[in-house]
Image (cartoon, rainbow, N blue to C red; front, side, top):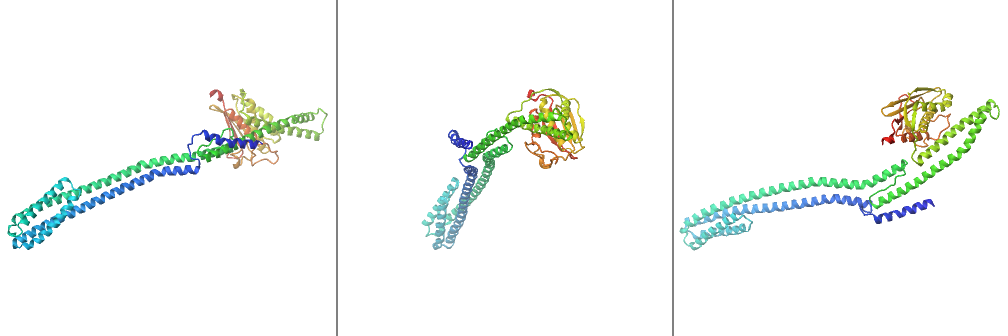
Length: 501
């Protein structure tokens, strides 16, 4: 029923959310990718089209310029050749006094007039057009006079002299044409350089723009993926209190909503687990108290003197009840930590006295393994929650005792370091396996190295110790040893962190 309720609640969220939300992304993640590629590609395509149009215009201009230059060059040559041909025909007719030789003149005149007409149609400068008009007029006057005096070739002296002026004008026209061609070529080169510069500027301006668009859309595309990845990582780390929100296309938003539904389900299961542990722990604590009291009464001989075997059994019951009580207290402490923020009751204490008290509680286990305790800690006064610091040290020291070999040693060092107190507890055991170093502070985790003669614990000791250390503003760290064994370092602030904040 609970699962059905959660699913129904989830299924109604997207519709309500999308009605009120302004659409900022395409509905599909694929559409977002295609839209991003399109938007990035459009400037490049436009730049290519613009470059193609510019190059085509330049090619057309170059073609027109070459065509015009060819026409002018060819026309100039024809005008010069035909002017010389007309002059030569007149000279022959004059010298030989033969009017029939004027056919060459009339043919050259026709070609001259035709080419002059073609040159007139070209887009020539005004000055050159006026000169061409003057040349045609001068040649037409000569042609008219020749027609009038064609029967008297001996009178062609003035016409022949006139062709000298016409030829000079034609040469001037040729020079002007060459100048025009050079100007057009220079203009074409200038246009080509300007086009190349414009294309280069466009590319220089377009590249960072396209890169910026690519970065923006990369962020827009990868941002929801990073949000999903972060949400999955947080759930894997047990951080279930923070709601999951994934922006972007509806397909990814839907996936984010499903992840949030999973988070709520896991959170509810976690709460049920903690509640179960709390209830079971409390239920076990009541009969355990009766067992401990009965074992104590038997061990103390209240019911009568015991034989050695009976005393041994009573001691075993007493020791086992203490171990079971510690496991139950660990479960209760873990449940309290998971249920709410750890509450600290601080007062001024002496760290050395807390360590001595913890050693006294562990004395039976220390004596049974014939361990040597090397103490090196002065009187260090600071404010803390004494009970929780005692639990921290008790859990660390119990691990050191558990993993220490028989007749081994445990070193306890404490010192003040700037504004912190540092406590190192070092044992001479087998150390910590490489695969355990990143997991030793996780709840319920059991390491690779466990003594065969020891009953496996709950795996909560170091986890609870670290939570209490963090609540004080400190931490617990595993320090790698070069000669084997394990070293746990407790770091606690001397001043009150909460007051400092």
